Length: 176
Image (cartoon, rainbow, N blue to C red):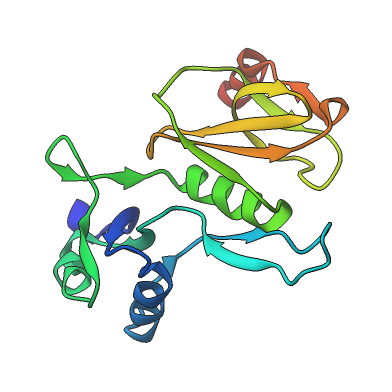
């Protein structure tokens, strides 16, 4: 039964082939996402450049049964594995990536260990109502973890636009 359920997975590609793999997957009608980071274009008045946010990664929304066809796409190396199985990426993390890429430019990405942290919500500004695992809010930058991937995204945000969430309150409301 789980083989028919669609999940997000990370596909590892050959170096600098993310856009090409994404186009090939789209042509085969396989839902995929290659997050592109806008670099520059605001301060120096030069044209913004779109580069893949994750080097050599493309995300696919598929079932386990369709994985063989995806592995056969040109420039796909393999799925990213965790504990001997293709790593499932949480929907909320893919949504977080979509949101950050849509709302911010010059996003920095860094490898990070998975840590438990507070939940926060952005209360105003371009990221209004975004919720996520925030590691730090310092120097007008917010760092949001993507635990399934072992990465942290960093974007500019005003501290006054962030509020700490009382998740115990939120959980009580969900139960009752």
